[in-house]
Length: 201
Picture 1 (tube, rainbow, N blue to C red):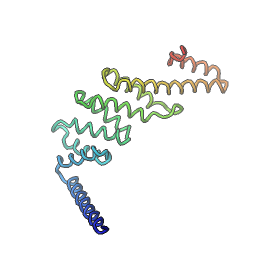
Picture 2: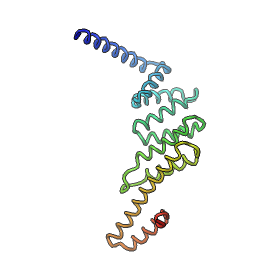
Picture 3: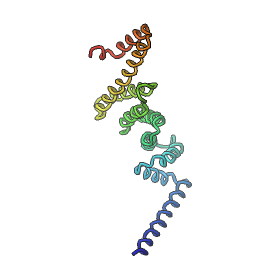
């Protein structure tokens, strides 16, 4: 029984090793179609760090030769899914601007906003990515008003504005606490101008 288990493991190890050798041989070769099949398998298995360089090579080789929109989408989305949000946002925007009629353009637009959302820090820090996320979510809503993701986008906009509102309020209140009353008055006035809904509550 022990021998049988060892034999099975031995055969499996040989098979896995031969598959790796075959894959490496293809990736070092010139058969682009075969490479793309491997990249797609990595993509399906969510091994995005492995498929990104293959898609990048394909995009470089195929540029200007034929439509590469599907490859480009998987390339851009791989950065997002892999947590490389800055690059993900850049390539997703490039994708939907270049291929607005592609079925994945809507998803790419939403994912770009999510990239900025993922980079939005706690309220006390610099809020450039928070503001950018609001801008991109709003652009998505304007571009795809019938999208199923519109309610999510609107909710995220509200949450992000709440973060900006808290930062603005805390900054104004800090001036008040340290006795800088003129600066506090100006900051609170700016706060109410930017968030008029707060003054009504």
